[in-house]
Image (cartoon, rainbow, N blue to C red; front, top):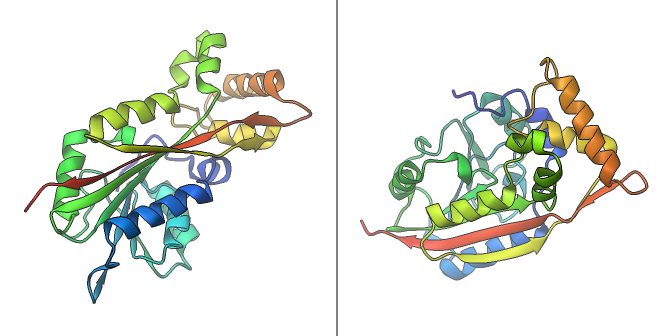
Length: 255
């Protein structure tokens, strides 16, 4: 069992973070169908997906709609508890206590490896080694998704006191694309989000760098969050032109 920087924030994450657009899920379905046209490794062994760093199931639930076996790997007990609740009724989802470097999945057991909003937490060499271990047939389809917000760079520019708190989701996507892929295909999908004051507060509370509500730093954090909302909201709604960015590549390594 591992405690991550999201420990204690699972409920906020589940309630506040955006999901993934239907067009992105359809793209994943089409990629799987194109990469594995037979639809199965063998008659008794369907194409299998491993989602690493599954969090609270924001991507896991729509992935389950592809009607393929999904192993949802999540190290944090708090996040994993919500993940279990979210997927309890989904017979094709198995929740796993594991990390990117040690998924605990059987060797040669999966065909597609998906990571959503989490690849920047992984160590590239250790993750690649684990992918090679759990992949079968000497290959795996690697897919990374990030919901890239439009406001990170703007907030960095006009909120210098909080620069360290704003990681920048587009930077995460750019950095991980360079570190984890050789020649990826990159796609983008509109995913606009409309925040009320309360949903904005919850969203901002869900970040790894945000203090927990019982922290002495929390009142100042909440005041800053409210100021950002007041500066940008129109008629009580803050609209963010979020874009879901996707990088994908079929990785062949031989056995």
